[in-house]
Length: 70
Image 1 (tube, rainbow, N blue to C red):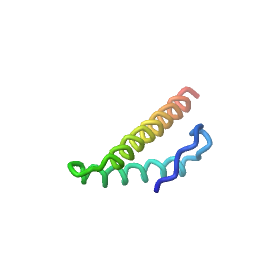
Image 2: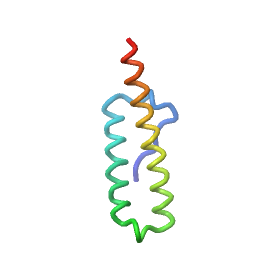
Image 3: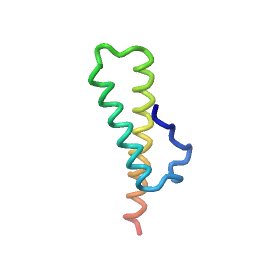
Image 4: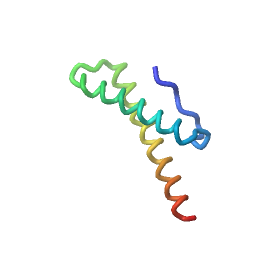
């Protein structure tokens, strides 16, 4: 099972964010490969992973934007 993300993603360093993104991408890929046969539990997991992946992407985007302003 994939460990949940902290409420504040700023607590994670660059390597932890990369690892979290990679874990979620890999698990989502496996779930999408079984798409027609996904159970309700798998669909819930896929939705959760998708939301977490979007949070990570937004966080990385915000960090890059703030660094660009410097």
